[in-house]
Length: 293
Image 1: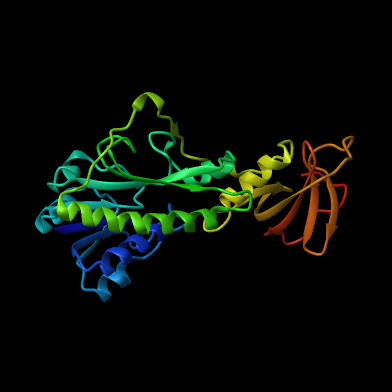
Image 2: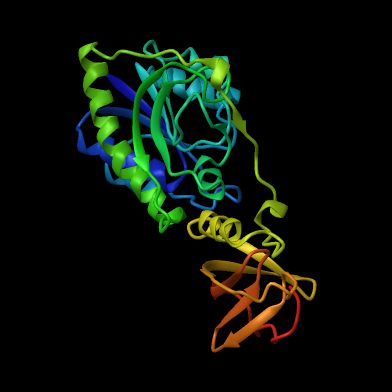
């Protein structure tokens, strides 16, 4: 069984390393040299060179050049993990077994963009690692494998990312085995219960202290490394925030956004229903007590 791989992020690298370890016929890799779009970008080229796997650097997977290159390799199946653009019919119809995609959400719910970020922002307590056959619509194809995972209060973007990788590594080995043996079964998605998360914007990362403390905590842990960080606007400039802590505060007559304390490199700000301690951040100079953010 000849496999072609498409991907360009850290998750892609873990999956490609796994496929290499399975000693299967990897006929090619489509990837990028660099990405200003993916904050978790990973260079797959060194791994391809190490194992003599043909690779193509590209920007548009649906371009004529890309389609022709993939057709020449004649893969039986394509694995597309960590590629933020839809594949068109010209690519989807090349492999006889289909194109396997991946989405870290409990499909058919929560299709769309930034699934790990939105799960943390919304305070979800669980999600799922889902492999599916891709079609021309985002995240709507038949499900091949779905495994639930829990999200704890202490989890952040990095720890949830690791959970997803650990679960998916086990799933992908099972998928390869079943594809090779013709024993893979699928489950159609129920579109009537589906929803689609939108692409986030810069404004979605702004900490507004009129929010309650839990919402600020969830936003910050969702956007911390490997992502771009939440941010606070102070004196017309945005400063990244990487870690915060919810703090009980009974000064209900103080307005949200007031700086209550500033010690060493941390400071405490009044929220709608309590206070938030800003623990890790990119501020050069801390705001002063009594200032508003």
